[in-house]
Image 1 (tube, rainbow, N blue to C red):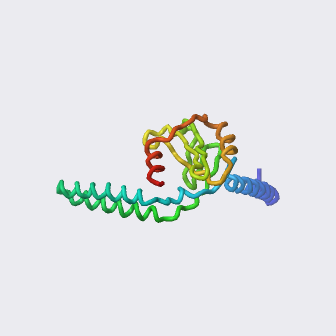
Image 2: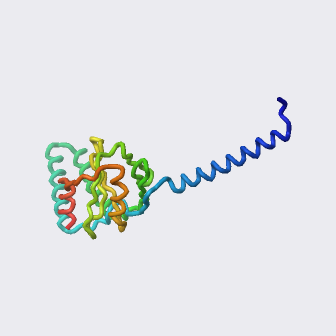
Image 3: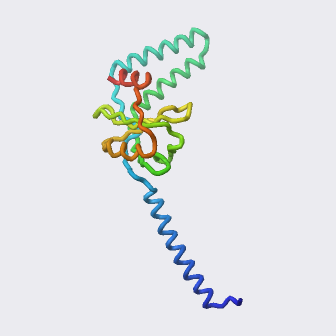
Length: 185
């Protein structure tokens, strides 16, 4: 069958319509991202540490540096000094604001996605103003818990969405969380 100009124009119109329709659909998917819920929160709480934290940290690091020098390991001593300096600078840094969303695939934190297939359960620690946190129990051995701040969002709405995708199982604070809260007083 010969390919005439009229037939070619009909194909072009159909193709153009389909492409435009697909583009609009694709833009909507990218924009809405299939998100059930979106929020923004600081990546971590602004640390306001007291004198006790600085005192214990300085004593601990000084003991480590002294041990390193005693064992004739200057590289270890320099490493611990640098750890102390980096830790201090990190405490002075303002936290970034991160965008979070809950989608059909998982929980998105900026450019990272925590897929529901890789999560065992979740729990929301909510004790304002100190604690507003979504805790995810991961199947990954190296990162068993993922903590996501929920900021000023409604924890009930977040829970209602998540319970459809992964089980809600009560979690207790681990030793690191307890030590962190103790030192931040």
